[in-house]
Image 1 (cartoon, rainbow, N blue to C red):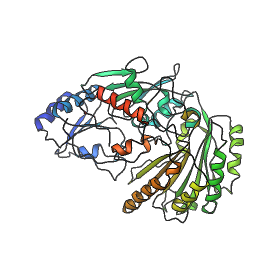
Image 2: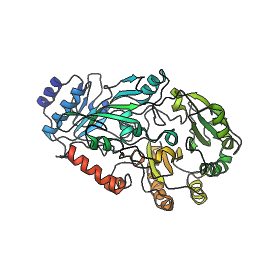
Image 3: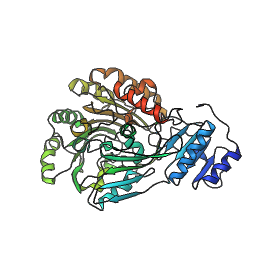
Length: 462
């Protein structure tokens, strides 16, 4: 399989257009009011630019199969694109297969199974499930795509009570490298099913995922906001609290350097604050009792913690959804103690001059630490906490990269054996991927990729 830029003739492109119902955009096409090939598959981070030889915006599963066969016959690498939230490096050749038009969800309330098409965002599933008193085990942001997020495992705001999103997957429908379509579940293609639940990519193009929904209508959840002068006390108090936190409560703490922009509440603009996120899938009175020690850590600047419908799950983290010049770094931590917090506060706390808008520590464990029956490829379960950084200031990108490298070095005494692939910054080199899975899991994943994509058609390290 070639990895060099390939010239695709106009005749080839015309033939592909005749065989698919979706749009086919070649790099040299002149826009007719619509997007160019690169614009049609633009990543969520504006720091990353895609300029493929051809983009196929699939409207059906048959379109996906035709695009895969087309690419294989011409030696083109294939990359999948739904929302582009996971893209971390530029694409300058090959075929990008866009699935955003292949969207939708069907819910069977009796079996509590949601059949979700490849281009669907979590918000669509959350809203549809809520109509039946059900909820998917989703991530902190419901604006991301279901498939890409789930293929990485999925550590969301209910990870301690409900486990990983991939734990709730009951099957995949996949287009393989030869254009054939298979169902992967516990009874069919079990090795592929194991790999897709956390192995991220390189196996085929997922066109549908079947996810079991939780019988859940409400949460006691939200966030407590504390002013800069209380960040240290609250952070240390929260870490102490997590040592004996119930398995059905999921929390995280994030230092936010809020910009002076209109979408930020006026009294918070330009301030550094600590947001303490909390999610308990149970009775509101019990949730309030469990959260009381956290409320008492310091005077609360803003209290948005209370009973919410599961359809408002995204309000817990309130992640921005618009495209931005974002750069993300993550690392799994075995544990967090006072010495770790000393360095964290010095480098990333109020007054540190940190180049990041967000520095977060998520409490893991609970159900998230336990693998599903039959096993899955999801990495990161060994971590007790998950650390992440987000920056959105392009001129300070070199500072971000340097600060992340410094963190990797000084945090070694607290480092977990694995960092979940969705939180590893790209590009995903062999060295980086060695931190995503155990050696045993990585070896098995390599064998499954080799079996299902022997020529390396699918390039998933972007």
